[in-house]
Image (tube, rainbow, N blue to C red):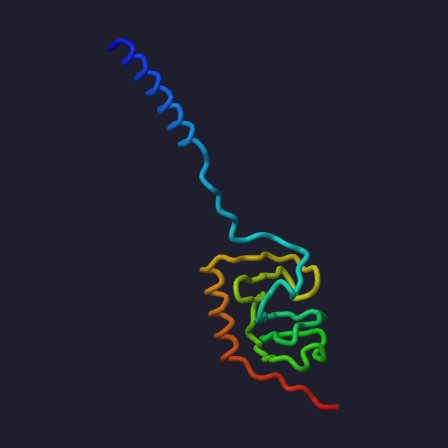
Length: 144
């Protein structure tokens, strides 16, 4: 009986070690990247957009957008929006409630950009937006 117990114990030990090695070598659930590139995007993907625009292209903006702009192609597209002007704006990005789109050029359709959901980056972009919004002056539209 002792020999049989030893053999059964060895077999159970080998199986246990094999399972432990197999489970230990499996990768754990990989996390999704916090950023990804894009060249196709839409304002419908962004809730409550807040826009920093060094250069605002010729693009229709959502009516609930808040915009701080340095240069723009068409002032009429900004009519009816909460818009402020600031000559020291550098960069082009759009903040949402849970994400940001950082663009490589002017804010216009199909501009290459990077989506990010990284909390640290969103905090810094929100801080920059709020600081710029506070320092900017309200845009005046001439009545025709």
